[in-house]
Length: 268
Image (cartoon, rainbow, N blue to C red; front, side, top):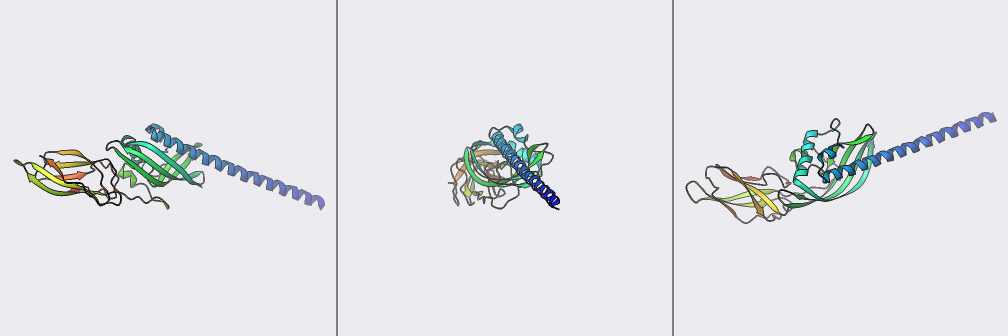
């Protein structure tokens, strides 16, 4: 009986030791996967700042991407074309797992220039990135939360779901008020108007584009000034562009400024 008890004790000890080793191996493997995901995220940030479109998308899985891949591609291509990154600070909040998949939660502070309108923008955000392991390498398959990448394209912004804890995005909202149309000659004249910001934050400082539309054609101009919350520009007049049968003014026609409402930018 004593021998049997000794054998049972040895077997139990071996089992516990094996289970302990197995648990340690799982922990080490999980840590390695987490480090892989962190490294991929850093590489993607570098490729984004360097405007290396091909390099950036080498870390994105086209086959397993859970959102519209082509819309995301167009959004990143546009980001690289219209933004110059000044600085990006990131803080990894947590990493959670779903099998081999990894959810990376990141807080960030990003500063960048809008190339076309010479506007400097700063944004804070909280985002979630989902990575899947494919042939031993991690690739991005979903984005959620605040728009860390791809915010220049409205169609992509609609693809990105909200997450708990993300930053509340307060934005400007630009509109146009037509003051009048005065004829100065045969069928031509000048239209007078104001640009307004009815949003919750100031319009990005710098140059704000507006387009004057009439029967002859469309012409884009630039307003060099700031629009604070609830403020309007001085009266702007454009000569020889007012045709009484059809005219209008469209502020931010190229959607260079991210607004809370993109549908109210034109008058009349």
